[in-house]
Length: 196
Image (cartoon, rainbow, N blue to C red; front, side, top):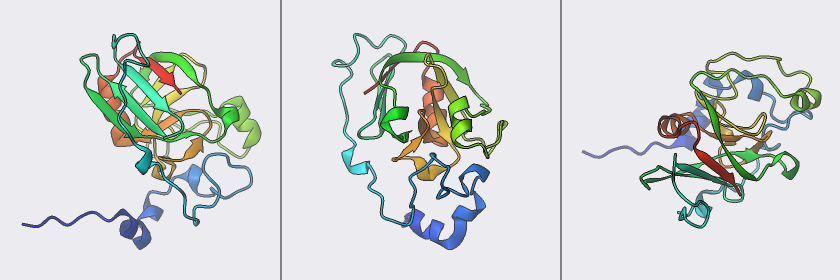
């Protein structure tokens, strides 16, 4: 029995993207948005070819509580379980250097049904954005979120899969919803996080 390979481009070209188009992502080419790269019609270089496995030892002294390393340049999240099992996920990263924070932090809260409020600076740049979006399919934080010790910074899912592999966030690290659900199940409060 032969399996038919899923062709995402054909699926999207057939109009499937319209069904899942989130309210906040409908006008991505508007002058006020900083949520995604401007021109989606142009070819955008993705990061798949830059994926590489990494060793945790140059970055962490131990794997107590597990370890997450986000490589901003290759747009990849690396996760090592406490027993050394390794996972690699494509991710979205901050849109600009001004929004990018690097260094060591940790997971301080795991949110199984995140709600979203724009930060004061996001609301200033985009006054038309809603003040609040509750948990659900249109939530910009996706199906799970892990708060970091830095105010307003999270590792979370996204309802807008076009963002993965791009500079597209206001500071957070975004994963496909199925990937954040996997990571959420393995990581714990206290998991060490390093953004490089």
